[in-house]
Image (tube, rainbow, N blue to C red; front, side, top):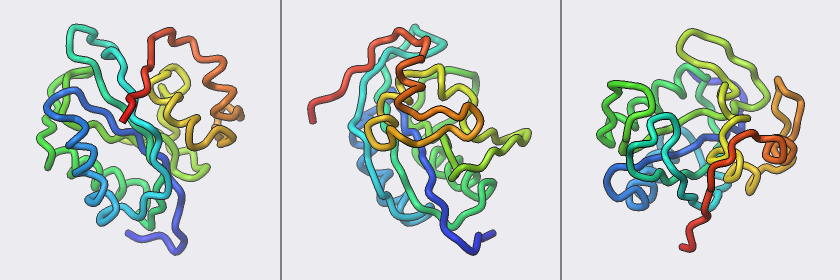
Length: 166
């Protein structure tokens, strides 16, 4: 269950149901207890919904954490936390209270039926790249071999990503 060495990971947080700012604030201590210490927080950004656009705007944020959990154990903890915050998975791109995605697990590449890391759509989504570039501009994508800064510049997504003034 545990690795011998801690690994730096990047997670994205998203949500568009309920008081998302309050949900994010409440999930931080749970992430620290169950996953590991939060090393960095990006700002929080507001974006239009992706995929199913007929729903409320999303708030998004990226965190860097340090964890001793192996990738599958990390995934199970994140799914459990989402569930504890009222997430029920019915269909793709639906409104949700809390969405927790693993963006990077160190420099590992994981291709399993229930887990793909780096996140497979990361390079196409400004709502992930913009908060990520704020805290890890020089991080190199282990498959694409490009920095986050470079991925933002080349991102085909033209949606507006607005930083909240908190």
